[in-house]
Length: 239
Length: 239
DNA sequence: CAAAAACGAGAGCAGTGCTCTTGACAGGAG
DNA sequence: CTCCTGTCAAGAGCACTGCTCTCGTTTTTG
Image (cartoon, rainbow over all chains, first blue to last red):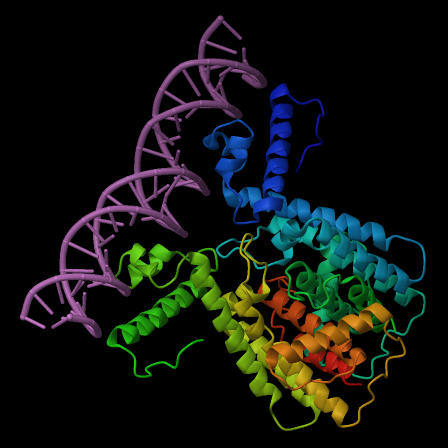
């Protein structure tokens, strides 16, 4: 539905697109310093030299602005993960590279990471538009797992088999992920997918802890801890 | 520093303690419905039949109220984890029980969980008073690991040895944890502690994802997924 | 060219955290 | 007993927020 920018549009539409970008850029700037609930429409408008009510012609509400920022953040993080996952090499190295990419992006954009993986603003309901960008990182990770399985790694190595309901949820999730990212079926076994989900939650938890200061001077430069855990979890997902 | 309640105090001091409790209770109630940044001092005061400025005699600022709620949440979650960790049985079962306790508490008090493990309010600086309650859950988990090592489980099973800097950080963290929770040294090996941290971050990540709707209809009743991952990670930390 | 749509500016409403002042009440000292 | 000091609730007020509505102006469109 989104038009290509600068594609033979009115001067007005081009100005509108430009201003929309500037508003988002300024909002991102304030987000980085003041955080998510410190983001003020009036302050954004003030900084842009316009009046607050004029901003409502571009975003219907503060939540709409936040949603736009969330989608951009999902897309940026997703792109970083996809790029890292697309490197040459064996699956485990690609998995570790993707994990590192996620962490690097999170460290570079902590407030935007908090926006998408931190506690949700209560009363804020994520619209449908966010679920496709949100699926990019998981999809990139599952892509690695699919390649790993294609290379002949055993699909069911863990001694602990999945209970039936969990196996079904995993299969449904695989289908949903395929539907949202495009036609091609990732086609990983439920066992592999569940291991991937476990590693994915570990990654998110570790990045969150580091970002939100939960390690408080314990593992303050968390590089060594992160590299070690990424390697351990890579061996867990791709045995 | 906190006095025992109702310990031969003035009627005035008792009334003050009582009102402080009521304020926190009402704030918690609003937290559960409106979320962290929906918590309004004026609304709390209104609900308690007093005027907003009167509230400042009990909490110097909104952040102070939040800090009090955070400490209470850490303590409640810590108590739940400690109780679960104190059950009889082999270490793995106790580990799983502790994980389940954390999840149960989080599901029962989602906004309070978000308060302590979600994205921090920017500009809010957690005071020193929070670090001791915050250490209770990690301490309970480490306690299980100490018992596991005492039962003769190998302290250095993982084939992948720790790099030197990580080993040192782990040792320092163990010492810091012992200092904050009391005199007795938990005394787990760096290898075990690091495995514990990895599992701990996985637990936090999984609970956060479930709570914050990151699984969006994929693993909607996440019970099966959680039990499976808890079992997997328990086998990881206690090999 | 004229109608229509989009736009920026301003005023205004209800809400917020927080400060300051005012007056009422309690409890201990003399 | 009186006085006096510290504590308390209440109210007014400041600066800020998101959001709505109206009013001219500008630009696009028929």
